[in-house]
Image (cartoon, rainbow, N blue to C red):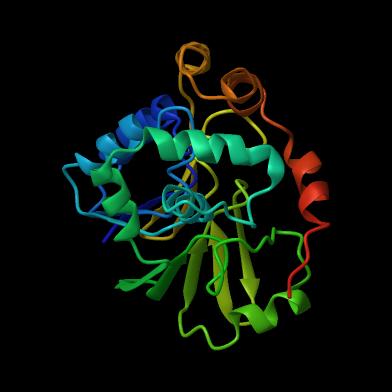
Length: 248
């Protein structure tokens, strides 16, 4: 069995289309979408595209879906930093009732067995929380309590938009990276499981994507095109930012 895992699309439809084309060529049997499809500049189009796939696919919620659903319900999530609240409000206004029902139906974690790996757990950030931050540099002793009791041989996550493959205790933990909003080299990042872990990178037409994003009414369209598509922050820069995040 070959399983593709895609995370953190953030409404970047052009990046998604390129990654899906690579996934088709990889002949996968199943796909997991690991959260944070939204918010982003093309939320409805991205959700509709994922709903129309011709391969088996399962979804989990990320912190983005949780925040947007809270906004639709009339609550502003305290976990959303002030600078991102406008884009969450905008995204909530774009979604149609069927999109809301779809997002609300997804679990926060997903688990199934993959031959060659055993029991695999998919989560957005950590097995216990969709907002926690850790990276390849986070000391293992800070992570042991988070992964303690996780009865899986492999955990797949996202959230920090940077790929890694590391061991926490006895558990292999891999980050699929971000399809639509990466940190580091531009392009779409994703994960292929089978026969081993393959951290994948897909180039796409960045200029075309940036032009289409700028043409939307997304409140942060200009900055998203410039800083999340054409010239993302470096991995070094973001590792330093995330090093300040605290784990309970």
